Length: 248
Image (cartoon, rainbow, N blue to C red; front, top):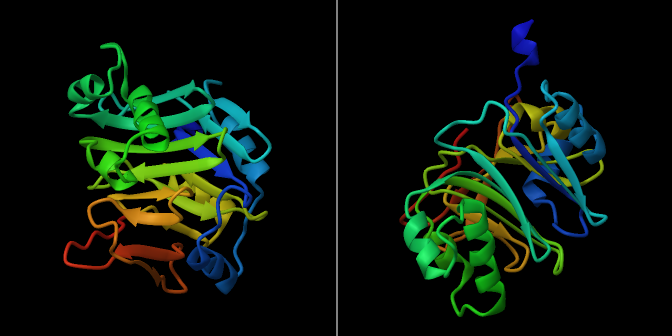
């Protein structure tokens, strides 16, 4: 009975089709074999209600985005953090090895943490930096996954570290929302087979038009459909000499 009360889910982001277009491969996988799904609203409700100690934080961002997270049972080495600044909302899990040097680079206070750093890096990318998005993400060294939503521009920016040390998954709910979470079981119950591991070493940006590998941003990313009996809808792979594959 104790196991039923323990929760693995830690962070969740859910976005409507007006913000992000669902990957075609996951849409197809969800239609291939009938499987149970639930709506985005019920997914968020399940996340919040299953948090045993009432420590889950949930927020509605505008009409088309929802974010939720909890600090319960977080790893000492991969803490979760959340921040809002200038209508930019960010959930971050993990730790950056080069946080100190990046704080200096972006002119932040020494007390700044990873989630504030990611927000500032995104703002620089959006407003003034001449660098492409892959350069900004490529400068982050460590283990991490983050979900960032810029309400002012309705921009979604999601990324995973090169080794995929912080698990991240995405899927499509019954009402067509795209959900991101670090717990596969949570999304499996809501997204059926339209579920996949988010590929390590990659980022998804609605500003640049989809999924990119930040080491090889020009390399095409293809989706390999999973077998009918597997819970995964597809595995996303980066083509080219430096191939990175998504792992469970």
